[in-house]
Image (cartoon, rainbow, N blue to C red; front, side, top):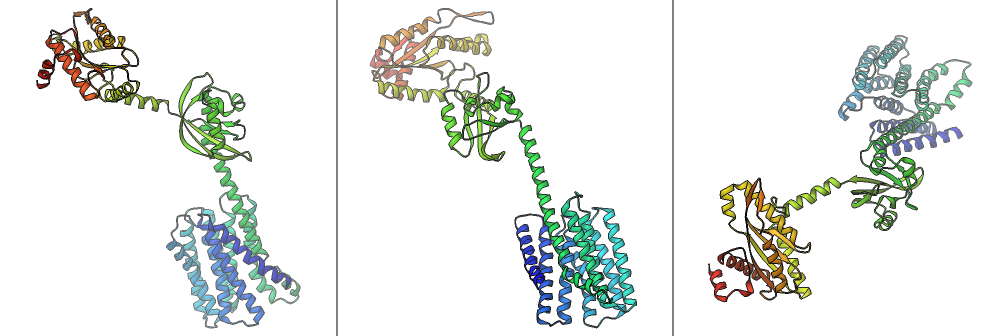
Length: 558
């Protein structure tokens, strides 16, 4: 009774374990193992009910044996190809089970005829061989050959039992054949020489041997004690199978962990981007890959003696260290990183928590974005600057003029807006060609740029027209001094491709706040002053505030 109680506890526990095992795993094999143990539990429950109630009928005995047959077939199908569909699995399962189950039903109900059983034996073995070949594919020719031999031996044994009028023993051969096949399949799984594989396969072999032994001992006088021993150890092979399966799962998990660890190691060490592992407590580096050593110029021993702040510019180090210590993760954080030689580069950093050598750590991935940042800057510069002269264009000038006016309004100091134009530039283009004209524009722009302050802005706003905004002029005299110095820049002719080209400029000036308080007014007045300078003979400066009102009205109407 004590042994039966132990078995009643252990088998459901094993079934529960396999239910938990397959829940979080994608492998279909574990679900088929669960199905097999559920069916074996059903068979056990029927057997125990028969023993307790002392009621046994052909129907219940048939269902009990069917459950064992289905359990063995579920185990068999678990070794099939991984790409089998559910429909194919069901088809193979029916082909394996229907002849056996029909024969058991006919025998247990007493309606079996010899010819019927012989047909079922031969047909069943042929179907079983076909199903297993289709299920296992070309996984192993040796495996299929062993199954063929097993089918022939089992079929001959069952036909002999029919011939000797021992059909009631056929179920023992059927079950022995099924569980022997399970043991062979488990033994020939890939990655042999594992403890779990050997234990489970031996358990299946003992499980298969129990049925013919049980029948043989039951009819032999003098074997009563051995029969009792066999009965008391009836569930031992099942425990061996379950224990072997559990070991096999653990071994496969360990193998997957080893493979995954090696893949991560290769990914870490061979990654082209710098990668680090560091301690969040003191910021000390615990590991670094080869790309990090190359990017930062340190040796491995040097790196492991550093802390995280040392890969940042000194002015940023305290802030960055505080962030790395207290933030658990961040993605694509843009910052500057410092090399061993003191040079810096733009970096995009990603960090997340990891466990390294059984301690809490942080993983840091660094991507050098210098080229990307410089490319973006260049694209912005091209979008905001004139491609010929390199000066700001209208787009950037508009932004600078808004800033210029805001600064002038806040400081309440005069500021100047100048419009400049190269005199007779069309004549130069027509005479010498556009290439010389382009060079003329570049040299003229360079001369003017050399004379203005860094806080001022010179922009190209038209073909040969330029705009200059000047902050904080002391007075109109200061603006006049600057404008006249620009005129004097062109006292010397330009030298282009061996040509000597004289050129002058005309300048119109509007002063904030004397001439206007808004940009539109100041721009219009500056343009008007330029036109007046052109009409007055060129090569001169005209201030909007010195223009007669009649001239302004006439220019505006023009």
